[in-house]
Image (cartoon, rainbow, N blue to C red; front, side, top):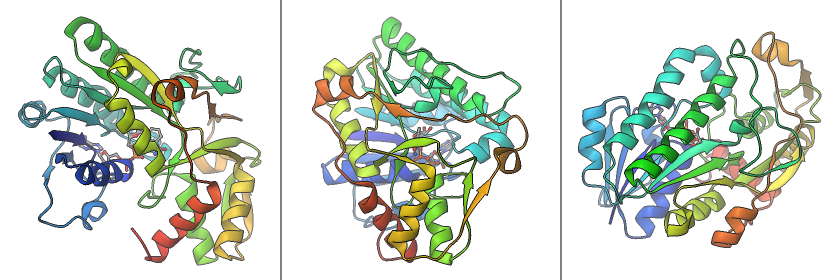
Length: 321
Ligand SMILES: NC(=O)c1ccc[n+]([C@@H]2O[C@H](COP(=O)([O-])OP(=O)(O)OC[C@H]3O[C@@H](n4cnc5c(N)ncnc54)[C@H](O)[C@@H]3O)[C@@H](O)[C@H]2O)c1
């Protein structure tokens, strides 16, 4: 079996590659190393059944060529991270829309594809635990943050349309905050940022009042979940929330990080406007209802937040990868 992973040199992608290789797959990765890195795959022996192709999902002939040999496809490549989306909106839209279209167009009927979407698709819907059928409440187009959610929502429509009209076996996964070693803090991800600041003894910056609640799931748990979905024919043509780890306020996350790393870093509260410019909008609460995922696959994340923080800290200390 040959698996094709776009974005396989990224954070989630590289852990997925580890899991697929351990499961006996031959793996081909397509990545442009824009937010991912060769270092994320450097621990894999050169004798492993892994081919890494440097290139873009925007290169339609290349995507078509690589996909021709695939038995299953994980499409993770995307423009991600609040900071990158705000700084490079045009490129972000192109990668998220055109890149996904290229992958879906190149697929042959019957080859299953798992599309990485995001909890951001729910937008400002703060009703509590969010189910896949709940409304998306997206802000104004003048607020650039929403282009990520909107482009991913459009990807979902596209995948569902290919499933319906071309018999493409698409499974859509909305990742909630997925965390673990190899996640970079460079594009605005909260946990790696907090841990790096704590390890350096620098102020841990909390945006807003810190009372916003988030749900954190360990990357290896999420990989178990997506691999089960890929292997479940009944999952095809459906959308799934992927998450369900521990819910915690951002302020408490900072406190836990400080305790677990033994840091003396002060906590510093930064208004959203100072962090991201005027008009930035954030959600008070973001938690998934994972009933659909649990009922179909029996999956539930197992790793507590304190263990996750310790592993991320080990990673940054260079103790593990
Ligand atoms: N980590 C999370 O909490 C989270 C949450 C919601 C959704 N997601 C989704 O999961 C997927 C993986 O995210 P991640 O957290 O691993 O981020 P990541 O940035 O580590 O991974 C994205 C990968 O895609 C690659 N890439 C970007 N543009 C590309 C292009 N044009 N061609 C080829 N490769 C390209 C990057 O170099 C990177 O390796 C993304 O689709 C993201 O939207 C992640």
